[in-house]
Amino acid sequence: MPPELTGWEDQDGKGLVRREAVISRLRPYAIAGACALLAGAGQFILAQWVGPLASFALFFPAIVASALLGNGPGALTLAFGLGVIWAELSSAAGGAGFGRDALEFSVLALGGAMIIPIVDAYRRRKIIFSDADPFFKALQDISLEGVVVYRALLDRQGQVYDFEYRYANPAARQIMGNQRSEDVVGAKLLGRLPLAREHPQLFPRYARVFTTGETSEAEYELGGRWFHSTAAKLDRGIVVTVQDVSVRRRAEDGQRLRLQELNHRVKNVLASVMAMAEATERGVTSTGEFREKLSARLHALSRAHNLLIAGAWTDAAVGEVVHGTLEPYLTTDPVRFRVDGPRIMVSPDAALALNMALHELATNAIKYGALSGRSGRIEIRWEPDSGRPGFILLTWTESDGPPVSRPNRSGFGTRLLQRALAATDGGVQMHFLAGGLRCEMRFPGLIVPQQPAG
Image (cartoon, rainbow, N blue to C red):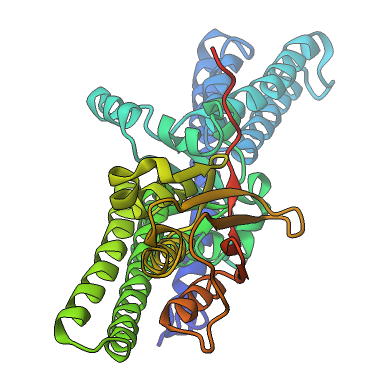
């Protein structure tokens, strides 16, 4: 390797980046020097024809052209011009200094000092697409995808220490919070968004794209929102596209959660059906009786599922669960039932548990309780549980039926009641009274406020 290239190149390309950084820093000053020399040459030539001061204005275009490259190049051309004018005026005065031409010298100094910051401000506000095709600019204005162009800011070692906004289309500014273009262009990335320095998909990723030239695509979370972004190198900076995909991510998360919930519910239903079949088999004496009892229980479970499907497996109202489960009895003999309670919502798990519990209570009432005779009645009421906030107390009270007594052992129906509601952190209490069975069920629920009339 030639000695003059030693230290400039290495395996990872960092030396090339440093060399490009030095060249990019010196290029504006070289151009400014050329502009100053041309203006000086023009000054010298015209001074031979029309006098020493007639052509000092030639330095103003050179100062403007240099200031378009930055404050430094503009100041270099101004200093060169003042030096040339000083030398020319001093020579014309025979070494006596400015004399009567001090005013012209001051005009150049003050004019140049004013031109440089004005032109530099224009340069910083000038967007990179100012000369782009109008059709392209119109597409960017209506694009739903944000587009941001950054200029890389390099330190003396050629490393990126920040990025300067050079362009942001309306979609990008909306993502930023409906910022105005003049408030964005010229600002620094780390100044506007300090946390970008440590975020792996922002400043570190942008710097890597600029250094390696490799396009990067990523999806990341920032401030509770999700974004999909593509970054690619563009001349002395990078261009970044960004879309807010929070709605899609929430939909995907919701779908994944629903699939997990569906899997959980299917397993629970299958377990319930298997337990129901085994327990029904133990309590019957014939195949016909087994088929009849199992079919009735499965139909009750099916009605509860239909109710939940109608509500897209969201919360169900207690009243709807009660009426849906007891529909066959309420339709054929409604006067024997009294159903009352406020509008309270329960989870799908609680709704299924309540459905199975009510079906077992109704079945037992037909076989042994109030519905086994002609005069028996059943009252079903539910209300917030005063002793347990966030829970509902539902009472099933039978009256005018045959006397009841506590059974010697718990049957499947009792065990089903206890297990079903225990799964919801609730519970069941059975009271075998002289006038009939009283069952108290507790389960979590949410009271829905009543809307005012009118």
